Image 1 (tube, one colour):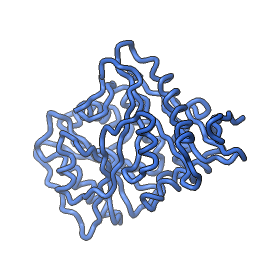
Image 2: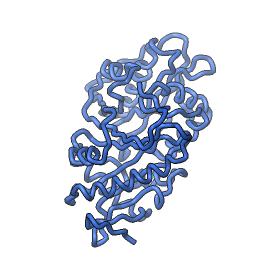
Image 3: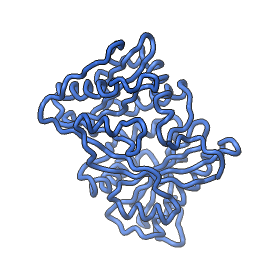
Length: 337
């Protein structure tokens, strides 16, 4: 049953799995306004709801019109340990007139739920809530600002359009390179992921074991879009020194590739390893007929990632802004470099 709100004609109710097609269309309609393309498939959204940490009826809600039409959606994913950061999504259809009260209704639900799921954090730790918005989505960004969310970081989407085959990688000496095997190599990969991203902005402390659980869930959620044969590991003895993970663009557009993650562990940086892994991935995508490859990068990364991608010929073509709101003051264990 829809819960009415006295300040707006809309109401909220828990999301249900039969809402997936409607929500996918709604999300894509807003994203398409600013990008000209879809953001999610029905299969991906349904797969996301299979995350064992997420209960759609508890952790999501839909905004319903008086006639029952679904016109908005919000989600807050319960965090793992140390439970300090709740990330969320809030979206309203571009085909309805959403006033301040309407955005406030959805954002208020999201913040309240974020406070609930971060209440398990140890006393004395800072907790916070985050959302993102495309830089061009002024309506959404104004709604965030009115609700007390502040812009915290810009993330650039970068792309290279192939006019010719990319240069072959120049592999630094001392490493062995091989294609990722998700069963044989996952544990070693996740040790590398956990260490590589400790100095990444927004990173919450975790363990290799928790990282492995999250990576398995990510690969399951990506389903056919993730292709382990597009992923490579650089080994130094029995340790993964660096890696690149590739997938296909949504909705499985085989003309567009995506570098989902690329990193080099601190002890092996400044040797050309990251650039070689990137060039190898670009070459593999090109060999398979891709016309372009994309990735997402922190605009202020201290590892030099932005410069590395520009050196490979990639250019920023879209920006999304990460917003945050502090829920409880305390010691911030999140990386803020």
